[in-house]
Length: 223
Length: 208
Image: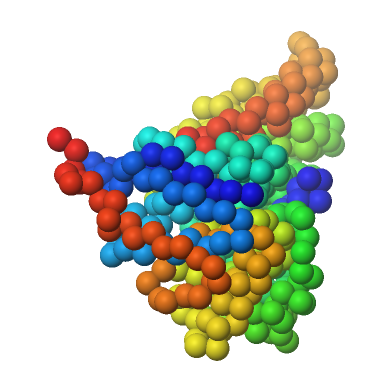
């Protein structure tokens, strides 16, 4: 069973890295958001430093959703999903493997790029460290919550918008606590640990519940 | 091992495709399902594979560890080949070999057996329709599962590939496997029985 999980993880990563696979697309989108913001806001460095973490998190959140609509839809269209539903590996773990592969291809590059992109928004070193840590903990939660929308999108043509509409509300708590933790790192009324622990809790819950809900959605939408 | 269907009914939208369908298939035999387009051949195979739920009736695989839930004993080959264009033939087959479990043929042997020897490194995208179908058939060989559900297995295959696949299917049946195949082409899978779905069409196909 572990072999099948790893085989699926390897295949999805390989597909993501090949031409047209979509790895790296998120980072480019992330970069676009970060580069455009200072032009829109103007040359006020203090303001940029204050709202920088929020801008970076919004960019990372939207970038994480890119490609999610095709996650199960591509497998449904070429018949792979039918064969996958007849394995010893339960659908929950199939969803988890695909989510993990998607995060490594899309979410992890965002975490790695964030410290560099933070410089464009005039963030302090403490803020950069805190932001990177919240992204490392928070982006898996976004991806795994996104699995639910991805599962529904596989049943409908043009399900891209569906993912955003279904998933975005679920990700709001992650966004709130991640940005709050980054703010707390550079001074505030609560220590960094308080919102960060809530973020870790949200992330752990999403890692477990996301695949379960996605598997249920895949079973319901199959005819 | 024995595949038993009792009182199967299938409905697609408002149309009743067939009802009260019974059959029993013993190990070492093939069931050839025929019938005009739209009589429910593909739907029947999806019911048997557990990919869709029947509107009435039951399917069991007697002799399986879980007779009522036997998806893990089944190879389902639908109209879609379940291969990714960006992967090579070898990668795709190795992936399914790891996923399906109970390994049988090695990847090279399976490719050789369906006549794709030497083409394993090519991406699936550049294979012809017939070669893609051969690759899909190779999936049946890399993992040992007793029941094969084949939906038009020989579509796009040339005459020699059809004969080659016929031999592979007969070998599977000889070893005590079961095959249910929906087809329009005459196929020889060894000892077999026929099921003409046209005869099971309800008198009033549209529900009142």
